[in-house]
Image (cartoon, rainbow, N blue to C red; front, side):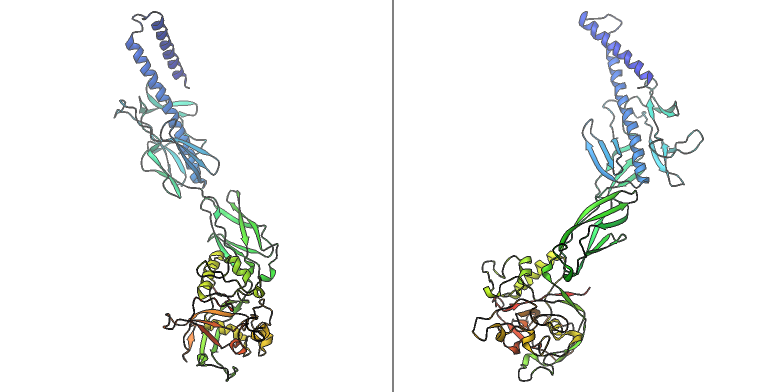
Length: 562
């Protein structure tokens, strides 16, 4: 407290105490301290007390302005804007990532009965000069030191103001000397630093501070934790792109540590992406099928932010095979036994396909349960469990309708973030034939059906009706592309509605564009229940019973190549 303030306050306190004593003991102290003098003294004391509190608030706001301006220059971020109703409305605390905090008493109003148009306040502000740095101003003009140089804004150069309570003029401190300013204030009113309601916290990205001139604005970015959404489950051998949020940081490097074995990652700082790839199916073990890695983000100040990244791979998806696109003849080509060919395999026609991935195995019961948790059902009431001799993790799922398969794929894609689908009929046949590696076999993988397929004779079905069953996937020989069971085991649904072939050449055909009058879906490949002819690569099946659960009907998955 300044010396002259202390002297005056002691005087008023002494006089107030003396008057109180006189009133208590005598009822009156005579002419020296009459009621008017006492009232004036009390009013003056209250005015000075209010001015003193206001002066403290003004200097606090100047210090806050220094902190906020320095934060702008140092690329600091706002971590919090907290408003308080006490000690009075408009009281704010601004916290920053540097650990600094600024206290603002925003927009003090003039007391009732004290508004005077002649009153003035000293507007301390900041603005940039030609160098681009921020410098202090007084009533719009640059504040200068004794050498006539503009004073840069920092917490060390904060201007200090005070009121001379005898003259009611403001003073500014220069070195150790208080220099009078031509600004007179008898009562506290307004905010000479920040505009009334000058803190705008409505944006999700910025806090904007408006100074008392109602023109100068200081904007600070809000801190947002370095964060990202956890990725979905991975497919074996595939990656996910994880977009991170670093708007509250000036990130210069990101490192991944503790990645499970055979997982890999790449970071793209410009796009704010982390690309993480799961191990190939053959490399998946109990130790790396899931785990937690740490993402380390390092900012320009050397600060390190760590976030955990949860990783897991849906290993029951198994492997996929890349089918290199090309042109082939679809239908009953020359190697197919003429006495077994039926009309719906004709005419032979040319088809051209793009690259795609196809699952090495039919969808297994393990994969089905990992995704769906129940046996195939349409209505949620009837369960269609496989026969006891066709039940097991590595057995193909059966008894699925087209709706069952599509519901499964929808849930699988939500779980993995991928875009699995059923193959088109053309994609199925091209892959079954061996793609570009085709050796023109009758069945998928060979001409001896016993080597490549489970069908009625070797499944037990022909020996005794209804005694046959499916077998674990991948127990027969693969075809030229390394794909198993495209002949036999279970019929496989494709994505096409059934229709007759035409002789016209086609590129990436998808079947009829609308549902045919005779609604039926296509199945391919034959099954454990079927004879050899149904297992041929060109043989087509169709079934109009859309809701019937046939125990020998399953499917396999396809992915587009990005």
